[in-house]
Length: 213
View: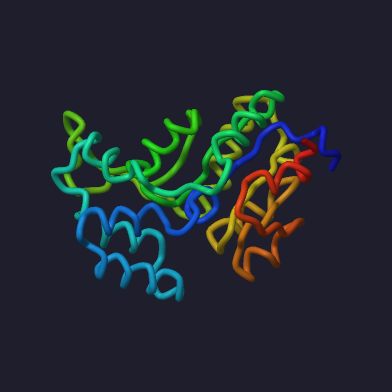
């Protein structure tokens, strides 16, 4: 695949665009549910629960919170260095950027807005008048990442071969296996095994050579 052929970059969110912690862990500190979320994350990382089971157990933490409440709690989430600058640079070349995550869309939404990324995936929560009920309206697994990217690519006349996926963990592997270029960024060993390129660094600028920029 020639670098000039990249038309779409799909970024994972947690620990790909975030620097020290996942959005859910950050939220847990802000909302005083640290122990509960840590236990769920341990179970998930160990493979003892699925993305669906994680969502079932954690949706209640959002009960009675508004969009503004969530935005305030996520405001100081630390992103990878030069995140906005690099995304803006990528977009200025005509390459499209989306966020493809199995996390909660409610947590990603305020950050995506800061990054000027309009399209992002994730688990959906039920809401009324911008207040979350603590119930789910839809799941989003690692395999849904494929259908999410496929749908966006099809709507924008992009082939999967022209997609670059950037991620760090097991939830990125299914997508890594179907795109033209898979980049394991600050990734675990499983993600590295399925990637075309392995990149480690504190800045999103580390990815630019692999995009041809």
